Length: 318
Image 1 (cartoon, rainbow, N blue to C red):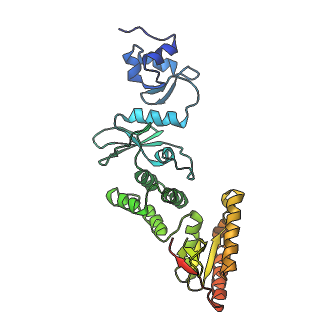
Image 2: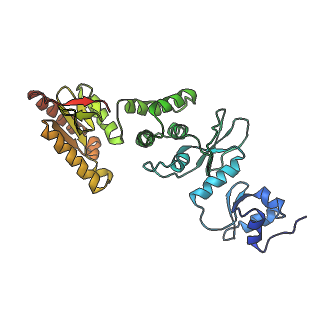
Image 3: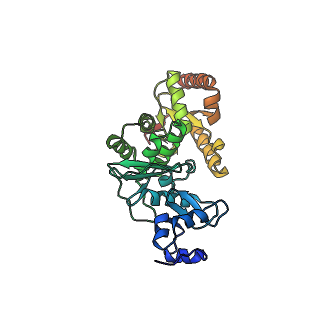
């Protein structure tokens, strides 16, 4: 029987190939019994238990990567990360940072129960991850796996619009994934995809879309390209009422963009006004806190724009 490595923790890591997060069964294989492991994982001890049967051979606070690796070890071979953790590792950064249980997918024939810090989902459609440090579900699968478990419309909007805006998957990819995946919890994702199909690209624009519907005004365009009479680009407004050449801009300053980004917003507004476009602007917070006021202002701007001759501006869908 291998000798017990109970006095030199470095020897334990060396015997396990330098790994820091390991299975208790791996420790037993090199001669460390479960009683000793439990003792070393005691409060204030040199090791830390992360999940049932999974130990970190250090006692510092576990990082998110530690939790991800522990979840994969706990879930077993062929486990794949999904949800917010997969999206974060795919490079998505505008959504909220992953927290709470790590979402992992496992084969449908494997029995594994979640353990508080890991959400284990059995699936007949286990993704085949691309080569890399982490086994990740596709961007479309990860986004919709997160959306199916969220009731926060803004979070779902922010997540889905980011993956589309960054070109990591298209609305068609997301719709295809919705059709082949579970229908459970898909209503919110479908609603957000309908918004994106209309051209909506942000949470604030989605709020604006809701108010447009309430206003009873004709359906506008979202993020079209405005061209002058010579075919030159003027600007890309957030919302565009083509029949009266009214642009509705949602100020981005509240989203803490850089001063350069905000300056570009002002330049865009000036360029449109120079072409005779009526421009209305609103802060994102106002769309929620003073909805009736915004709807009334939108109707009045639309009526005012209809009184003057329409400028020679062409809108091309974005």
